[in-house]
Image (cartoon, rainbow, N blue to C red):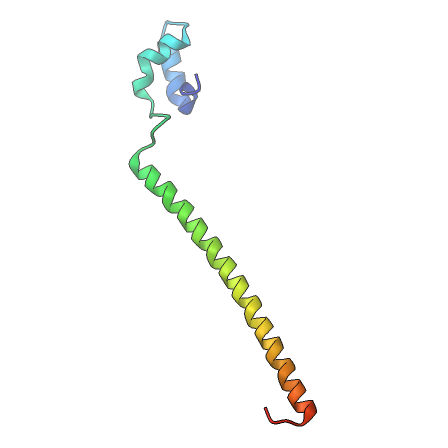
Length: 93
């Protein structure tokens, strides 16, 4: 029955055309009319994998950018502190 629900328009048409009341029999006689619930088309799989990879790449880029920004800010603060110390002590930078 779950597979019948994969395409409600088609399921309604089949149910209105049949004289049977057995869902099992209706499914057995008409399952070829529905797309496979177990194996999506190869292009669909490629698209799904591409979308997942794109999301992972975007997340990785965001994480790397965040870490780099933090590191650069920390280095800049350290350098600024060094320069202040040198100025206060009269040393040349």
